[in-house]
Length: 476
Ligand code: NAD
Image (tube, protein in one colour):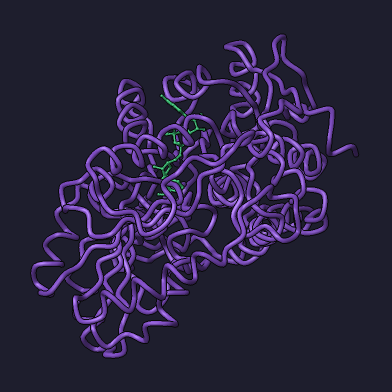
């Protein structure tokens, strides 16, 4: 298989082109290096129809067999980490080392997740009646991931959907469709036709999916603004929804922290994947007692980090993934400059080509500044000084978002007590970004609806069904 050409969609078990195509850009060079099918209405209809035809038989397939297939897909991804991660770097921009972690991690996550089972609970077993609650698949799932960790996010959706007995139409982001399409090509022979379909397309395709009457559920990962549109568009057909949306995650650094160690860990908590992680640290609240030494340690460490083309072995931070995100992040930097906030590092434009932004640290901007209030999703981080724990918890919780948060310090009981008062889907203590297949993950408030991962994540792809049997009088 040629990983650098011939990108096709997977529909009804066949590899297909579309009437139109669009270009994929390498964010490090801004060169269009691949053409992919631009699915239209008819392609979507075809994929949905195939998924609907395939649904009854797949739903009736024992979960042990579905598990075997999901694990075979995972193994195929693991067997092809080498070419897949190189392709991922070219379309997404992240360093090869991170792309490898993502592709291998997706395969490993899927392997472990597939061990989960759908529970059956006996609710009554009396003289009159036997009743049990079980979980049946929903139907056809439309899966719409974002571009930041496109393979991981796709796996988070199609893995549980398939294991639970649904069929799938997956649409990768138009910025990062290539690796996903190649995975489709690699796994097509592992599934019955129509069970797993992958279609690529431009901005028109997502809204077409969320409004399509043939899809029973949408599993969406993206911004909160788009999540609102997805919910509105899904309302007329009352589709089930999982929405994994934006975050403005706060880290709270306590006065007893190990400054050097925390500065380094928090750098990567904020800047891994160039800050393009939903649960990246996006506002860093540091206690006054350690603010100055922490600031110095963070700036010193940040100066050592190498920015460049993700395809170069020494690169630690690549470009931003796409022009829209690049301009958004530059807009936030310009706003900080116009408001005369103090830059500890960065803030200037880097010479092109490529969507490169320097690591930018801003010293104690006001709480109501855009860089504190908005999700930057890029390599710009505000450090904010605080004195009082009650007050900082209020500031953290004032956001309409509540995806993740973290607390850093030696007093673990105090850190735990703070964690319990934060309103978010996850809180880490003395670490961040950690996720496991058995742990559910999702957002509080406007960071989302529903969860991914864990048994709770699997159940999102099911309808709860209770069967009640009135016991007949036994024949005398
Ligand atoms: P986005 O909302 O622009 O797009 C996400 C996906 O939705 C893409 O595939 C896009 O093509 C599609 N899309 C765009 N408009 C649509 C519409 N009207 N209807 C249906 N689909 C549509 O988001 P993005 O910029 O690609 O991703 C960045 C955002 O994703 C950030 O806010 C980040 O925090 C969030 N995110 C959240 C999680 C999480 O698990 N909570 C994980 C990763 C990223």
